[in-house]
Amino acid sequence: MIRAGALTLLLAGPAAADDLCPAAWERVATTLSAFGAAHGTVRQEGDWCLVQGMVLDLEGQYLPDWHMDRLRFRGSAVKWVVDGSSAPEGLEIAVEGLRLVVQTGNAQFDWLYAAQARANMIDAKASLTWDAKTRVLRLEGLSIDFPGDNQVDLSAALTGVDLSSTGAVQMSTTSFALTEADLKVTTHGLFEGYLLMPLGSAFLPHEGDMAAAVDSIRTELISAVVALPPSSFSDASKDALLALIMQLPNPSGEVTMSLRAAPGIGPARLAGYALVGVPQSVADFEPLFQGVTVDVGWNHTDAP
Image (tube, rainbow, N blue to C red):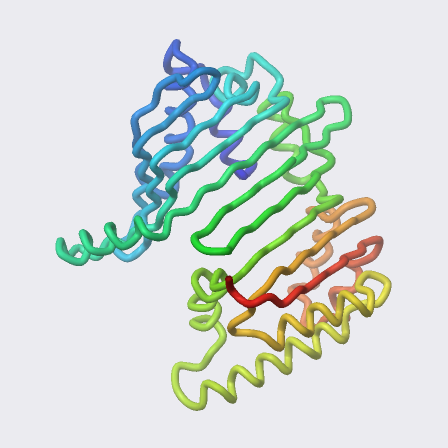
C-alpha cells in the first residue's frame, strides 16, 4: 500500500501527459524515485494500465532490485493520481513475475543471480476501495503467491481516511485508525526464505552457542505470549502462538490472525508512547490493547 506521504506527492501538480496510463506511471515512478530508479514500458490494455519489464533499481550495491514481468493497475484512483479530477473510490493492482535480484558489481555473479531469481517468482494482487461518506479505506484483498506452497492473504479496514484533497490526505496521516484486519499465512519455507536471515542477523549474537541463544529468545517469546492481556487474547489464541513459537525456526503450516479494534489503532492511540518512550514490557503495552480482540489460529501441516 502506498504511504500517505507518497500519495501527497502523487497528487501534486498537473498531469504530465494526456494519456492516462503514461501519466499515472510517471507519477508512480516519481514517487518510487525516493527508493531508487524505476523504469518500464507502459501501455493501455483494455481498462488496465500495463507496465512491462518493470525494474525498481534500489540504491546500494547489495540491496536487491525489484523486477516484475508485468505490473497492471486500474480503477478510479488512477485518474485521481493523475489530476485529482475524480474520487479515488477503487484501485486494483496485479503483479506477475516479481523477483528480487541482488546486484554485486561482478558481471558473472549478477547474471547468475538474475537467472536464479527466475525460479523464485512471486505473483500478487490487491484491491482497494474508499468510501467518501464514511471515510473508510478498505483493503478488500491482498494476496501474495510465493513459490511452493507459500501464500499471504490480508484484508483490512482503516477509518478516518479522507482522500478528497491533498490537504485532506495530509490530515489523514494523523486521524486514521485500523479497526479490523484478517491475515492468513501459509508457510512451508516462507519464514526461512524471507524472515529468518534478517531476524537472525538482528537478534542472534555473532559468535557463541547459537542453539542456546535461540532457546533464550524462545523463552522470552513464550513469556511475552503468556503475559498478553486475556481480554484481548483468548487461551486458544495464546496456545496457537505458543505452538507456533515451538516450531521456530522452521514453522510449517497455516497461521491465521483476526483483529478487531474499537475505536481503532492509529496515531491517536500511539501518541502517548511518544511522550513516555518505547514500552519495556508487555504490561506497558496494555493500553494499546484496550477495546482490541485478536484471534489467532495455528495448524501444523507438513510441506506437500
